[in-house]
Image (cartoon, rainbow, N blue to C red; front, side, top):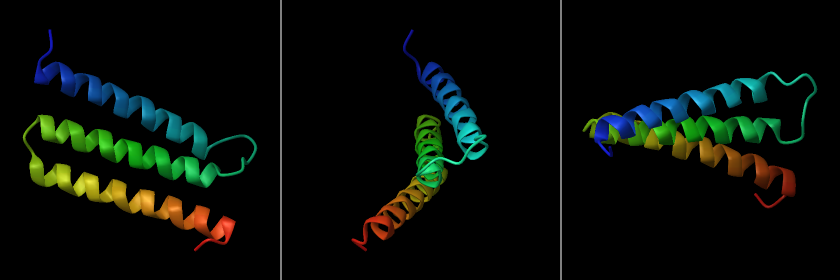
Length: 88
């Protein structure tokens, strides 16, 4: 059944999965090109998922804070990419 409770449950599951992926990315046996960028993107994904869950729980202030955190992380991604490609 499609309820807000089910949506929150699935978002919590997605958050945990992305968190686990981020832990793997941060602890790779061998360094990988753009590992730092992948880590930032998964952190941003966590913040976006958290924001959606908070919205589904009618906590708009916390949702906005999580959304702003995601925006900051995505800005950091572009800063790294721009610096690596000399477009910044």
